[in-house]
Image (cartoon, rainbow, N blue to C red; front, side):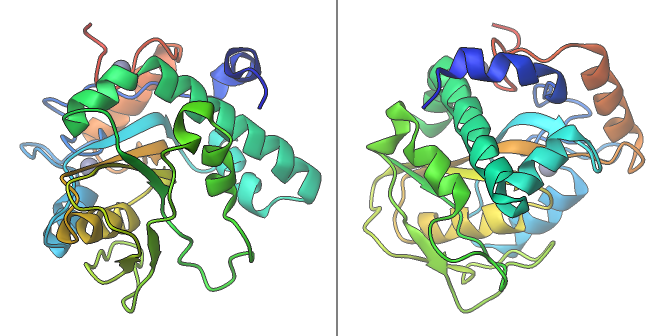
Length: 248
Ligand SMILES: [Zn+2]
Ligand SMILES: [Zn+2]
């Protein structure tokens, strides 16, 4: 794969920094909760819908729709072939650079080094056959390839927008006692991520954290979302800080 630093540097302007969890920032996904809440509207719903959710979602960037990162995250899956190939390399480079720089941050939330890395399978009926491009991207990252295993397949329940379910995914390989890093491209309501996290926990995973490239944010949703987005647009994105280590 292309060298991550050189490959990601030209794209930095399409990424937006993610704030630390705290007052006015969701403790799970780092979006904006309603006043007086610790969790955003989506996380309040989806963490209640499954038996064992994860309370750790690590977005690399915020994004809004439409927008340049939204476009990348869409077209690496659905764009014309040449664009897909280039954008999958871009996605791989972003994951490589982030996980390389923030390895300790991810270890701190997992309670140690990840034993397994997996991606969330597509739940769309019209998904392309073959390996999901995110799986291709993760497998091309040197530090993650040997840990990657396709642990999840779609289960009997749908993981629809805003509706997480313990049975949305089946765990196909032993995960007992494992610290599992789940990588997904986008986080909207957390239905897919929480369904995956709960399925992994329920089959014995010791810890599950979700790394997502983009957490969508709607500044119009509430005052905290507006404030978070305005700040994200004021301060340039850097790979040197993440939503777990900004005050380091
Ligand atoms: Zn949230
Ligand atoms: Zn960090």
